[in-house]
Amino acid sequence: MPVQKLCRFAACQELGITAIGDEDLCCDHFVLRCYVFLEQIDLERAKSACDATRTAALKRSVNSCLQGALEVSLKSATLSNLQKARLLDIMLWAGEFVNQTDSHFAPGSGISAARLGLVSPERSSYEKPQVKTRMTPLSQ
Image (cartoon, rainbow, N blue to C red; front, side, top):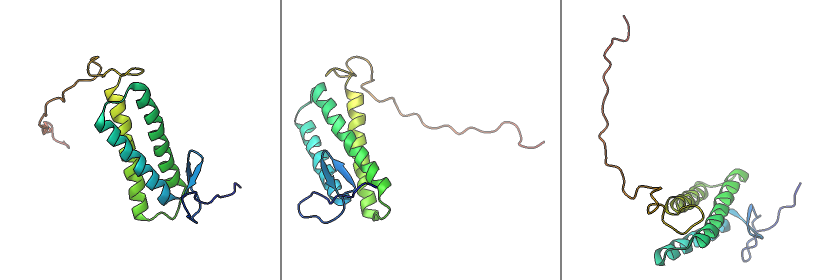
């Protein structure tokens, strides 16, 4: 059985449940690190468009946040509702970034997928749902 290591965040005495890089972290400090990282990504993306190489590196890092959040949620049987909510928030936030990078960039280049015609730049118009009626009776 592997030896459990302590969280390496400041003077935390909790057991590490996952790692970011070589840093073992408890659930709360993992969440804190992920929030800081995801906020930095949002700030960078708001300032300027990233090139495809930078985006690919960020996507790998975001995927490690997703993997870590999944690992924490599966390993710990004693998560509070707040911790569960925060892990879900990280998964949704990171997933949104991955989805946006997949839809905005063509594979292997910094060119917009919309400019290449791979993705429609506009949304399709709303179509009101239609109610279908049954023409034949259920039982005869």
